[in-house]
Amino acid sequence: MNKRGFSLIELMVAVAIVGILAAIAIPNYMLYRARSRAAEAKSNLAEIGTAAMTYKAEYDTYKLQTSVGLCWQLVGRARYDYWYDGVHIGSHDPSFVGGGNHSAFSTTSSFLASASGDVNDSGWDSDQWTFNQNRVLNHLNVGF
Image (tube, rainbow, N blue to C red; front, side, top):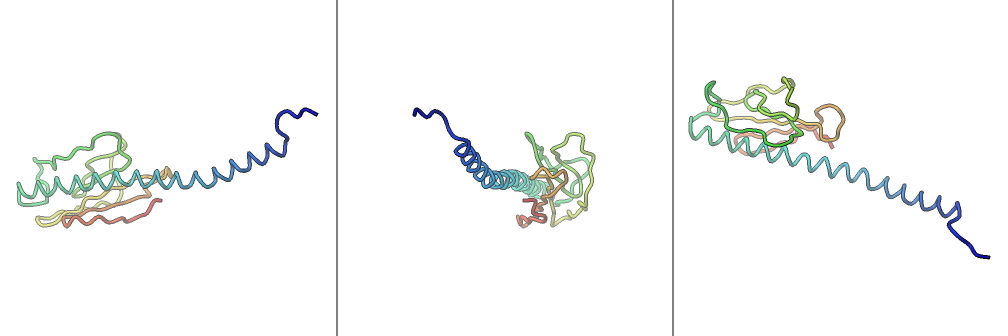
């Protein structure tokens, strides 16, 4: 007898194996994606910190003057919103108006920059970071 193709049992076993592999791989991929998105916040907060330190060297204060900005601009597509001195300075959404609890913490000798974003596509800011004049990076809410 000449046998062609696969039996139903063989196909079901193959589909089950693919399903098990997908169940293992997809959560790991989502975690990897969230961590890579968080790297954006760390990098941009370090840039904001460098801009703030440059500003302090020039004006002897971290507190922004009304006529002079921080000289930091968000470049490219962002997944986080950024604040400095309680002021929203960058966003993943160009129509963003502001919000959240981002008080003005900058003084002549200290500053606090913050970032919040939705790294796991939950629809709300589930990941929050802060960065200060001592170059200390704090992870407030773990979104992944």
